[in-house]
Length: 106
Length: 119
Image (cartoon, rainbow over all chains, first blue to last red; front, side):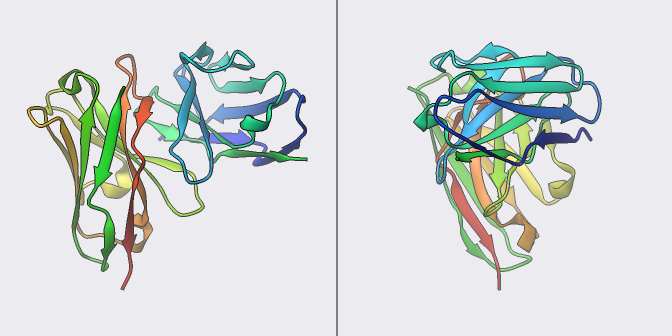
């Protein structure tokens, strides 16, 4: 099984900050990585797939990078709507998620 | 617009059974792999099971193998999850998801249905 590890678990930031979340896979997943945003009481929403491809309708302040085992999600300028929990997910072998990163207001 | 609506959740005793349903609309259901993803209260996301477009291939996370069965009815645009021998650790919100054609990631989600396993 492929384990996904995100860091940090919680991140405190202010509106306008540049935010970076890291996701590491226990073995190479090539670029088969997706990122999701989840707000309390809501279903997750797909942001990025294939490590760096932005899903239609997702603001361009979100970007993803990486391949192999190390990946990052970057929010270039944090907006009030971006305070949420973010999950990475590998789909190189079935599917598994990271434990999540909560982005909270500083 | 893609719409996925789950139903069938509720309170069940340990060892009991429950069948979840997902009604799909707004897309050609028979053309997409479908999956179930769950989230225990206050916890992260866990993929549970996936099914091929025609139902001929099914995959499960190890913790539910032999207890859960995923199925679909393409004529009725419906996805199902039969859950048997339920345990406390199966308590979660269960989401019906549509898989992107190019891989097992999830581009549409239902609102979720809560399954609580408790005596």
